[in-house]
Image 1: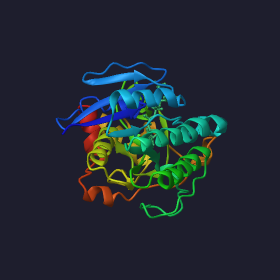
Image 2: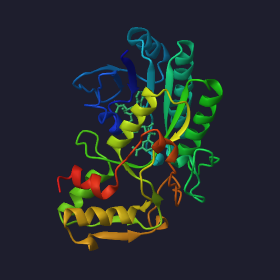
Image 3: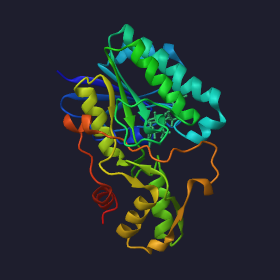
Length: 292
Ligand SMILES: NC(=O)c1ccc[n+]([C@@H]2O[C@H](COP(=O)([O-])OP(=O)(O)OC[C@H]3O[C@@H](n4cnc5c(N)ncnc54)[C@H](OP(=O)(O)O)[C@@H]3O)[C@@H](O)[C@H]2O)c1
């Protein structure tokens, strides 16, 4: 029987990559807020995530089997400067959504982050304790914890790593790096910040895998390799065949940011790999994305 999957925040960077992912065994629906989207084969609805009544009305209309909850304030610096807003959108609203799903026996997948960790003991597995060092990460960890306590039999926590991808309508750091490098402009990249970055399309496949298998508990959807931001940028420069000296190595302390950044939040994702999550390495994915 076909599964109905409702994706909140489908108008964001991750959400855009669900386009084309409708499968014979699943029908996708989505919500947007300030950026209306119209996608083929995905019915999308406007939704303010704090409006629980509107969310319940959507659940009653669509009757989804699974909700993948992406909608969030996703910028750590913004969250650091607006902690109350972060708590309202990323935590409080999520609890109301979970309650509504619990009352209807709907599987709930919460998009969390590698930034729930402090970066001192990577690589992190699902069993490691969280200890975020900025408002965004602390808030996501708190939400994870309460989500599991509230609805243990049907909540999935998907910890997502740093993602890269190409999307003109929802650009991310790759877009600006490619544009700068192709124009001969330099970019600065941290040599002391390590992540298991991954192509966003692979993460979407991972989220659909978790939805289709109704996998509960915590899952890491990290990429297959640990790289510094600098290593990643040099790889990109090589693929674009531009001067690698355009990538300027910097330390985290050289760039002033509102939110503190952990040194190494690489994820161990073996648990997800065992059920079929198979993200590609950056060199291969970047070549595909950039037609190189
Ligand atoms: N991108 C990454 O590298 C990354 C890494 C780790 C975790 N994550 C997590 O993955 C999820 C998706 O991230 P993303 O990169 O796609 O974020 P994004 O591009 O910033 O998109 C955020 C989405 O949330 C929606 N939204 C924000 N405030 C809302 C509100 N008040 N009511 C309803 N919808 C609201 C936005 O809708 P409109 O644009 O229509 O307003 C948009 O669809 C987030 O939970 C994020 O924390 C992302």
